[in-house]
Length: 114
Length: 112
Image (cartoon, rainbow over all chains, first blue to last red; front, side):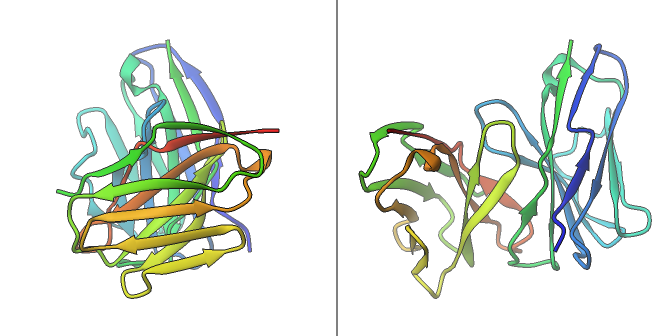
């Protein structure tokens, strides 16, 4: 069974530029999550989708971050414009459904904002 | 709001030693708790998902326990090996089970 796929693996941009990350969850997984992990800390949930609908985006900085999962499969997370403090690893995870299900993580995208 | 704490933040042990990693959480009304491993520059690998009704879950040299009443979980690693060197993270869901709150992790180094 293929795992969660993410691209790119690494990205370096200047502040105020835009960047987008892509995630393809495990086949058949209805729930998709985006996390931000700052160096030395645990991941923090940014947004959660159930199929193509948003379940929770309470911790997403909506003035600069956006995410979509239009067809209920793969998802894109965008930052526009980026700030220095956005430097982090962005992790995508998926689970079979809502509720108390095990989450499976992708390898992450390491973003450096200069 | 769930808060998760892991102690110690870093641990260095000689190869072969048995060790315990600790995780505490503030909201004891959890349905399960998940332990992850993270290698440098990599994503998270799920190690164990322990249900509140199970109290314990084992996988190979790993054993996780869960005590909801005290708000604690432990991950026991038997006969540690250099390949176990990584950061170990625990995570607890909120009441709806949809949001995981992570601890800061324990960075483990097993020396040959």
